[in-house]
Length: 38
Image (spheres, rainbow, N blue to C red):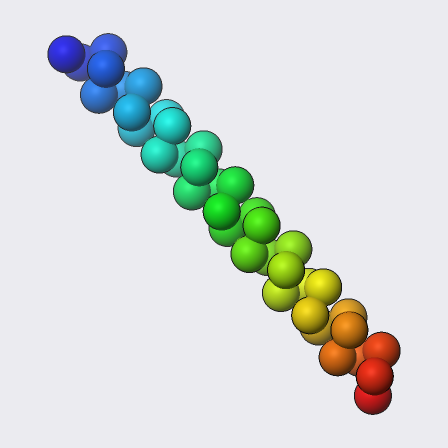
């Protein structure tokens, strides 16, 4: 049971990092587009 919990924690952490990474990339893209139009 402990191993399963550990794997679940790792998956959650990795997907969390990927999500925040994707969000950061999207925010940066929007920022550069906004600056491009100004």
